[in-house]
Image (cartoon, rainbow, N blue to C red):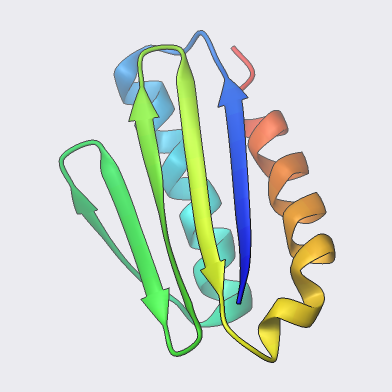
Length: 92
């Protein structure tokens, strides 16, 4: 199993950070057929072989993804794409 952990600093208002997180989740859901749901300030997503959470904190978004096999073989590609997307969306 492979783990992806990304921390993205931001200076967005809570509503803007939530909208950015939703865009990241929508992209992940589209690409990997994930189910997403909010639990307070934590956006959880899952499907067979993938689960994770995007946690919104003041000035920081923390993404944690657990990948099962065989998706774990693409972990570095997934991490690069998601990190790039988060960097773009969490810019003030």
